[in-house]
Amino acid sequence: DAGVTQSPTHLIKTRGQHVTLRCSPISGHKSVSWYQQVLGQGPQFIFQYYEKEERGRGNFPDRFSARQFPNYSSELNVNALLLGDSALYLCASSQTTGSNQPQHFGDGTRLSIL
Amino acid sequence: AQSVTQLDSQVPVFEEAPVELRCNYSSSVSVYLFWYVQYPNQGLQLLLKYLSGSTLVKGINGFEAEFNKSQTSFHLRKPSVHISDTAEYFCAVRIPDSNYQLIWGAGTKLIIKP
Image 1 (cartoon, helix red, strand yellow):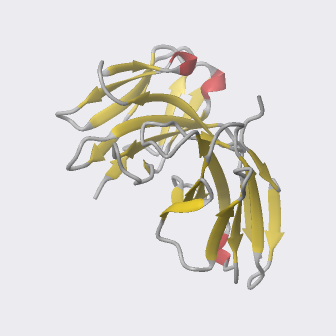
Image 2 (tube, rainbow over the protein chains, first blue to last red):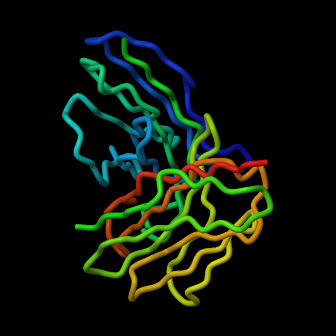
C-alpha cells in the first residue's frame, strides 16, 4: 500500500508569493495534519482536518490556510510568503483523530524562500 | 501546558555500542508518549509508543523505551547500534482524549562512529 505522498518534493519561491502544497493520505485514513519543521527543530503543528472539517489549528498566522477534499487529500496554502516560512512541511495521516492513533508521515515538501 | 525536552542535541557513539537518547516531559495530566525517527531527507517514522500498561515498550529496529512516571521520562535505548541507525530522533507527547496535537522535542542526532 502507498504511504502518505506529498507534492512537490522541493519548491523555491520569492517573498510575497503564495504556495500550495498537496498531500494524499494513506488509503482509509480520514484525518490529515500539517506540520512545519524549521531546520534544527522539531515539527510545529499547523492544522488538522478530519472529514473535510478543521479540527485543530496551531499558532500560525492567517496567511496559512488548508482544506480537505472528499477523497481526504489535502492542500496547505501559504500567502504573502516570508523568509521565515522556509522549512520542511510535513503531512501526516491517521485513521481518525483519536489521540492514541499514530500519525504516518510523508517525506515532506522542502520550501525555500529567496 | 505540556513541553518535551530532549537533553542532548547530538549523541556520538561507536558502532555496536549501546545508546540511550533522553527525553523528559512536563505535564499536569497523563500523556501518551511517542518516539519518531527521521532519516536524512525523509519524513518521520514511528519507532514506538506508550499508551498504557507495561512501562517497557519495544519498537522497530531493536529500539525500546521505558516510561518512568515519577521522573517524567521516556528514554530510548538500543543495546547495539548500527551505522544505519544514523538519523535524528524525536520524542513527542499527546494528551489522551483530546484534540491537542503532538508536542515535539527539538530532536537528538544520533551519530554512529565506525
